[in-house]
Image 1: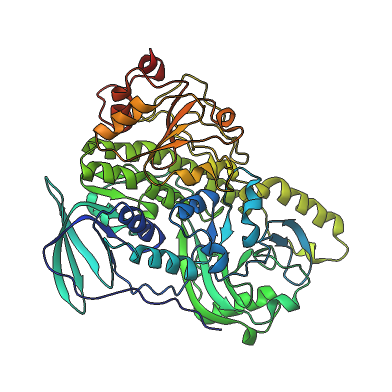
Image 2: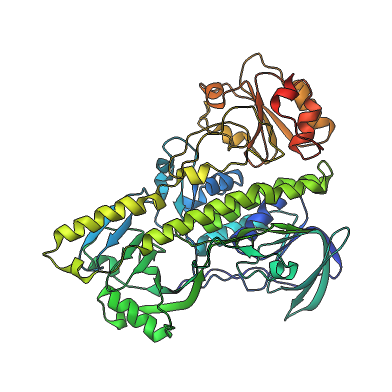
Amino acid sequence: MRLTSEPGPTGNLPDDTTYDVVIVGGGPVGLAAAIELGSRRLSVLLVERDDGVVRYPTAESIDTASMELLRRWGIADSAVLRSGFPADARRDISFVSRMTTYELARFPRPCNADRRDTTHGLSPEGGVWWPKFWFDLALRERAAAETTVDLRHRWTCDAFDDGTHGVTVRLSSQAYGRRTVRARYLVACDGAASPVRKALGIESLRDSADVRARWQGAFVSLPGLRARIPHAPAVQYYLLNPRRMILGSLDGGDLWRVTYPLADGESPAAAEVRATVADALDRPASEVEVLDAREWSGDAVVAESFRSGHVLLAGDSAHRMWPSGGHGMNTGLGDVANLGWKLEGVLRGWAPDDLLDTYTAERRPHAERMVRRAWHNYRADNAILPDPALDDPAQKEARDLVGERIVATRQTEWRSLGVQLGGRCPQSPLIVSDGTPEPPADPEEYVPTARPGHRAPHVPLADGSSVLDLFRGRFALLNLAPAVDSGALARAFRTRAIPLDEEWVGADGARQVYGCAIALVRPDGIVAWRGEACPADPDALVDQVVGRSARHPDARELTS
């Protein structure tokens, strides 16, 4: 079976056109940025130098926070209907001594259809397996549906000039020649090598020089593999022998992505990749078809700043991390949620340009946490070394010991709800502290809290929806007690023409979960303020949460 996605839209571009935002890079983060900005009716041009065909899959794991964002965009259910992966196939992780011998450990995970089981009632969503072939296509179709978004593939950003009032972007196409467009802002989603970041001179920082390594990747067809191995179905198999290797299922059938570390000086050609995979699977090379192969290097770095003037970085251009745990693309989607409403506020005039400085202040610490988390997962995996003795039938005790070690050190990679839903920015100048202590951060366990600076917790509503469904990309004012009056705060938003939804939430336990009578939730789902009554100075509160305050009072000053 051969699989390629569809090419993206091309076509001529008019010269000297002006947009609100130009996005450079049409991968998942760039497409997500187009959706988010387009849903806010901002004019957007997205340019991607390639044709948009996914020939090599690089990401499959979509976490819970990303699924909540996709839910707001109306495409979360596509994870079951159009993910390209069987909805009823379990997503277990299996560690094996060899593909044809013994399983050492298994981490059970439910199928896409049961995705909500992964969050145990803490979210209306759950993580899914959604290979890039189909995920990119779903994002592209959703972006193309926004009437203010223009998607153009096979256009290259050659250069840009950041001026006083915006950016001039010089583009070129083999078919249509050179064009110049203008925009108030440019968002660089152009990947780990990011020519835009390099042109800006923004440095990337790493904690240690000893974080880089070379890996071989291959997109392969392995007909009948599942029927020929003794192990139960899994979405990923981690092999120890004859060399460390990871097999990830793409379609629940014959298509797989294979990765393995390369030794110093090892740079295999396609035939060697085929032989290596065949050897690892104890199959003849004739049963392995290499559809694509490429070498890649992992890293663990974060850009010094995510902003320079009218140019902003998102996704891999801002932070590069090991794929261990699937945090890279998901962190990029979180960037988009944070940045989208801030760009709207500045472009619509209800927030100052300085609001965009908080993008780095809020997202960079989170990206650093994700980079460290992925690096921890990678090192834990590296510590489990090949051992031919594990394939000896007489070495059951040795296999049991290795299995116990795998469970003890590796399960944290697939128990990461605290990381997924526990993002926080309580020190942000946009957040009004309520004086309560900051809860500890547990990467595995998520404990809901509506403390300002944290994700607004999920509460099920009577109609079967979630309180998160009340967050439509605008500010949301939640009234959680019957007699509460938040009218003055609502008027302060409307006087400034800031988009706001007022919601009365009568769900059982909502007030207890949120710990207040009124909660103000930002457009990205972060609680900005909470209290038992409307603040005495609602104008000061509004000015703070949109970045207009010269100083940042806490909740006690605002309510006194």
